[in-house]
Image (tube, rainbow, N blue to C red; front, side, top):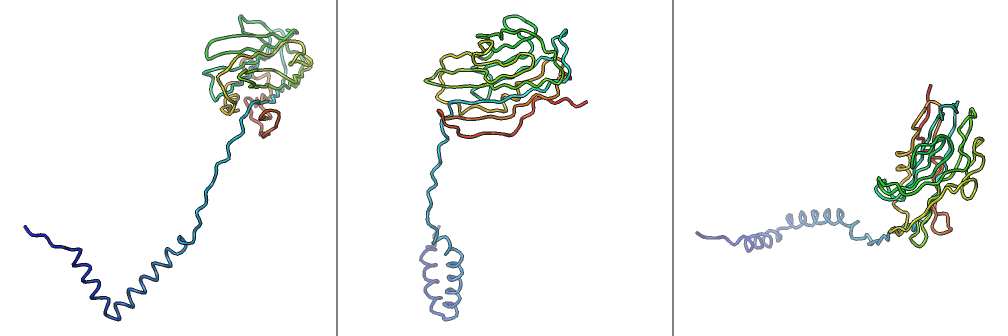
Length: 240
């Protein structure tokens, strides 16, 4: 079996052909096109893009609003629940806020209750002092669910609550609607407001609620407001 040295053959043909003027002009023309095609690449200046690290979020505030239609005190209707978690799921620590009812450790009608959970395990509950039932038509309830991480201590708290039925509530007003415990988290950057929306609900007599919505979310790094999400996120809206 014999082998042909194609490398030396190609080199020989190239050198011989280039002596022909027509071949030389054609080769130079082709080379010019190749240069024009690649020339822009030669003038590109490498640019190094540095990713800007997201600030370490240490506090999240959710502003909620409930628009009641016609409540029925004798049936403790309607019953509403909102949820907040430092992660995008409910597999770890999170807080539950119940309006017009309480379910832990057993069911109680009326009032407000804040609960803390770890996965499926119930940990703690605090009850509003005025355990009365909703009875005012067209009542609007507003409150803030706040979540703060400080030195690995995670705190959930209800703030700025306002209701014709319960008056002002949260943060030292008419009930201890807060709780905290030690956490392994370094920040609250895993928080996702959609998780709050997906797990909140009108659990009983939903037709007696016009709308339940998460109106605003604020993100803080320390005492600095990092950003605000003003896009309303509707959990429930009754359409007759």
